[in-house]
Image (cartoon, rainbow, N blue to C red):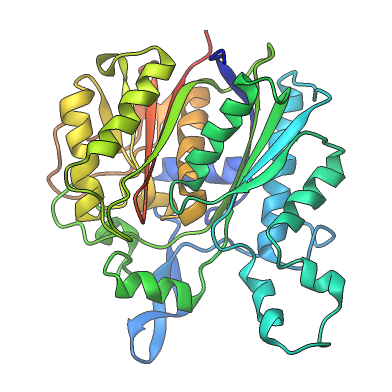
Length: 385
């Protein structure tokens, strides 16, 4: 299988900052978190208001009745239209990789509603394959279509999966979509109980990746889409390589030896044909938790000596299954605009950490993702040459 420079030529976004990639970019460069107080997300026994990043209402009501489905379709449509504006034309074999962990939670109550309460067609909306099939049908795409679920690495894993399809000549093009609109009190509360999600203060205070005093992350939502192709086209960046691995160690914790995290990065660099000292930026998973920060700080210090490090989680929130995708979108838009949308530092941190919006020094970026349960992924991108 030949490794190609797979071009990302279209980007679509729906985030806590609003609907569209311009809303995402403007929010990131503002240096202000997308988090707001929402009722029912407080950490106390009586609930109350809590800080989360939530996708606002919007989208085309003709697409679907739920925010999840509308956001997925909107991000995909924006990415396709953006790619066409860059000169992309769909081939005869367009595949779809959809990164998704919990699916459309607004549709789940019907499962427990009792037989006969909903039609068979309505029940279909619960199955993860249905949104994928409807999107393929809308555009008449006929390549392979599937969901990827690897916890918080799902968005990055979808990019690696899409690139493997392109390199194996299974497809001409791939639409990659990552959707996670799971900010329900029950879901957020679970992460609060695990001691990693913080709802009692704003994200820039709670989530301080690679800095002193970080307590964890603010829960977030997003739907992000990319178009990828090996054919000649203008785009945001080329995907040079990627890798995935699994710790097989613990249901929540990272293996402290970091053997498979390091191995995943090494493999991604190898497939990209680069050494660690050629990486200019580490776009980190960076959720502000002790385990993840330690792992990625070790990678930056020992493997990427010339890199600078940033994480946009204090700004966009931790978007779970869409986390890797929204963070990769930050780098792609940064390549296009000539700036790195790093959040402002709020306390002492590692020497390689960027502090706020920074002029871009063009070069390869390594995007790392670490998922609960031991999922690891790494993607290497670079500006088009």
